[in-house]
Amino acid sequence: MRSVLAWFTVRGASFLTAGVVGVLAALVLGSDAMISVGALLVCLPLFSALAARRARYQLRCRRVIIPPRVAPGQPAKVTVRLENVSRISTGLLLAEEAIPYSLGARPRYVVNGIERAGSREVSYQLRSDVRGKFSIGPMRIRIADVFGLVELTANFASKNTLTVTPKVVPLTSASVNGSWSSDGDGRTRMTSAAGDDDVIPRAYRVGDELRRVHWRSTARYGELMVRREEQRWQDRAVLILDTRRSAHAGSGPSSSFEFAVSAVASIGVHLARQGLDGHLLTDGGPLAGSTMFEDVLLDALSVVSQSRNHDFARTSAALSTIEGGLLVLVAGRLSADAAREIAAARREGRQGIALLLAVSTWAGSGEQNGQLRTVAGADPDTPPGPGGPHQETAAAEAVLRAAGWRVISVDAGTPLGVAWQRLPRVGSYAQGDSPKLGVTSR
Image (cartoon, rainbow, N blue to C red; front, top):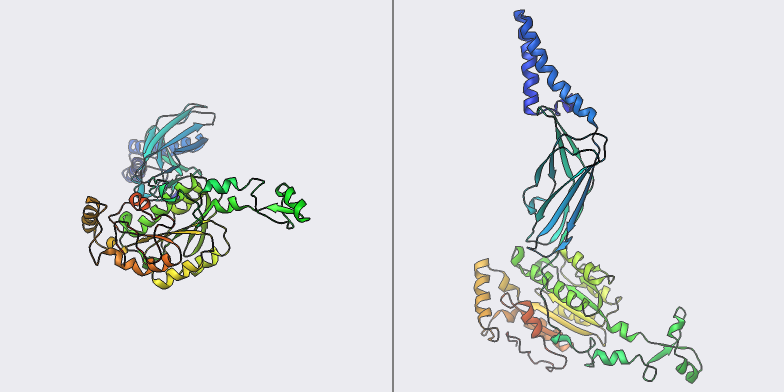
């Protein structure tokens, strides 16, 4: 009974109530005319409900989001197409889209009757300043009769996903235009190494492809020899994101964690567009594989969140099983012990790059961070004075540099693009020396 009464609008319920009261009053007073009026008020909503129920509209909903993946602040256009596949025309339709409250108010539309085999389109824009994956839909349709007495509700099952990726900053290739390994040779040399004259063969193993057999070396050594896949090894990267809650400061889009996520996204996209495949690791273990690396990376980073881990044990275990020529670490507060743990996981021949965040510069309010950005941004070539924010990263820097990593300390006032350009080149400083990065080290 309750579900049936839910069909009626406020007007329809009022008609029913007035009709019932009128009939009861007419019976008490013995007025035939009042009974007729009361019966009319009761029957009109009931007949409207019966007609709306028997209409049996068959509607189809199709939704398209263009583009389905956007950056924070970039608008996405959502187009919803309603098709009438029933044999009769529809009445007035009230359409409402279900969207997360973080994207704003739910779009509502009044759609005039749709003729048989006809369609209507409605569209709206979505915009989000925070990353994430948002479920769009389903659409809810309310069907009202011409008198406004009855309203039936129907929900479509179709949903779409809008992905808001981290902010991606364009990076130059000047900082890593050499070999992806630490030998200092260019990638061009590694490509030419695939020739017959200077190929580096190895003995054939069960499972190797026959097309990799190097026949000249086979004739020389008297056994099957195959080419090493050194170029494939060099064209891989492993990105390590520090998601430990205790390692970051600040809140919202201006926090050090969001800066780290944006940095990993920017570096990953930069490397992917240079032809590298790769993996994404966090302190909790692997997050994304190498298939369509740019897309998989952005999808994974759009929903990554902070963890309660305190070490990089899972990262070290994963690094021992993942093949890669380039390691890129973006870390928050990093102790010397944690730096040794990560440094020890780097294999011989791999190049290591580390961006260490001076997290204390993100710990203040937005006004304080703004002042830091103004001071640091006024002259990027001027390093901060003694005791500056770089001191908190000095111990980890020293450990990683001693292990052969290229390290830079980044504060809240240093844009990612500037930090990437100032990344020291391979062999640009000796063990214990400090790179000239706009922030000084011990």
